[in-house]
Image (tube, rainbow, N blue to C red):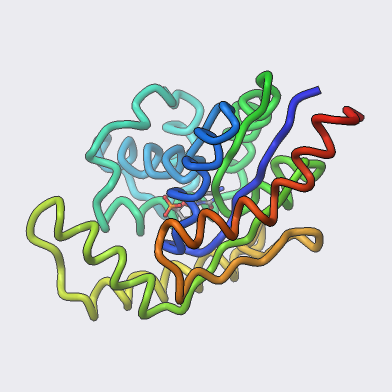
Length: 216
Ligand code: DC
């Protein structure tokens, strides 16, 4: 059996950083599922398509090359919004499902971050976290990140984007952003990276260690 840690949460909540650190800690594979949707958004833009058009987005999703997930072009604010738009299409989500589930099955384990990992992609995950922080804190973190890469938009604009993205991700009909019933909730508003990681580890380690001792 392999161990799966699902790390879902809101935009810029710190879930990606935490998931990466958990994967490094346990020596597990790591997947940023948001990068897949960002790659679809980038592909649609490159093809001159419309992210609101399911057929345009599906054509890109079906031909997706996940190896491009490190492309810095997907890390812009525009691709974050585009990803949120294309991810609301049921056929796009379905096209990316098998890749994510196959990734999750890799030994000795996998950590995947996203919006629906604990609810839809891996409902039987060993441990589930749902990471959140108040919007102003998330906007400031994302603004600092964008600033480190060049000229950032105004912080108020970043906040507005985050709120719009949360709303779209929460209200879509398929796989909406919602904590799994059995997810441990982690609010990182008052925490730096080290404190948040310590809290995340304290929440998931009993489940991971239990699974290592007595595999199902
Ligand atoms: O985690 P991120 O900011 O890179 O995600 C970008 C968008 O992709 C997010 O607004 C919604 C979508 N997404 C999703 O619908 N399901 C996932 N598992 C991951 C991301």
